[in-house]
Length: 261
Length: 270
Image (tube, each protein chain N blue to C red):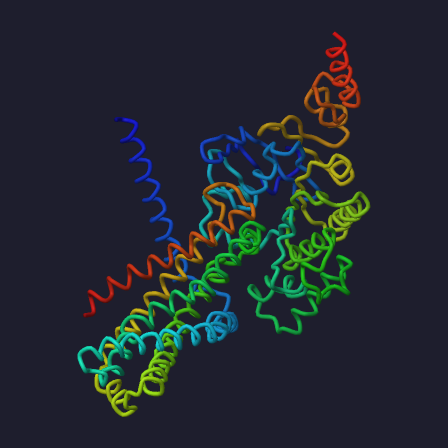
């Protein structure tokens, strides 16, 4: 019995230490924004990596998501004779929910995993130690530019996702299934209000913070707990970060929705 | 201490998780010359180096820099100290996404307000010093092991440090390249009057460059002194290390195989 209590206590303390270290990491990441070196060039570079290079995959995902929504939505609404509401259904689903969540998940899979691997390799190859020994703040140099770039990119990618998705729904609903184009577009225009767009923006910003925080943290502390700086630690950190980020994004989605609805 | 010590290690103990890896380490680093910390793999020499460069700050004991404990330095003081030092890591620790020139320029870009043309020229000077003039545009992955170390050394020297720390300069290198790197370290001492601390397990390299040697074993200092003093040491573990024997009593390692083969043969015969 005492052994079980000890194990439970040790697990609790371990999790508490993990949360404390994550909290400190977040503070250093924010503080790094204001510290030298200047970040303009590195932020632009990261925007290119996180944003521009995700353009195709986000567009592709958005188009098919919108098309599926158009298809499913049409046959569901047809049961009630409400095909004219297809535009509203597709637009609201995308702007409020699917756009921010799927964009964040896709960016996590593409850019977040690359962040973990890049920083993790720097950790095991002593490059982060080298930065510290050159009196360069590794948070300001490595982490903060990624954070700023994600804050810029994710809301924009989400907006792009929404537009492409609505167009995908249009192609299926209007061109394939014969819904009136006027009904589809006016449905989009009438049903979407500022609150929906605002919710999407808030969600995408929250997801960007979560994704960068978790992915850079996991990369930064690759192998530190184990005291083992081998390549297998990088792959483990990458898997952990992507899984944890994805689950956290879904949980955060519920929290933000429940607060903003 | 006859000569002034730039860094003084006083009773340093260190732990990895709960395991103690350094025991009451005491030595001084004089303000000129090359101090070599040597010992077998896992004896704690890299841990000492990590303490000296401020990457590891736990454990009882003090490291005095200009009379002040490094472990109690504020963040600002630590930044100031690190601007005075250069570190060559065992792997070179070059940034893989940058060319060799860009690697050398990193500290200059961050810590100075020099124009990019000036920084480029300064990087070229360091490359020239290390014999890498033609390789400034190469990516680290395109360099050999020895060249990567030299490039790492060029970056460590970018800010003209007062003290240079070098971790295992010859490990993984062929004897000729290793000797070349040792010559380079000696040139740095003679030309720039730099204080250099080298951590190595290579005997030839250690005796080639050292002004002062510290021999470590299992987290403790076994002996410290000039190379001549270390050579004359009667400490069994030091002799074992110097003579490369597997037993402190001085058994010839070349007889190891024949002893095993001999005993196996005897076993099968009986």
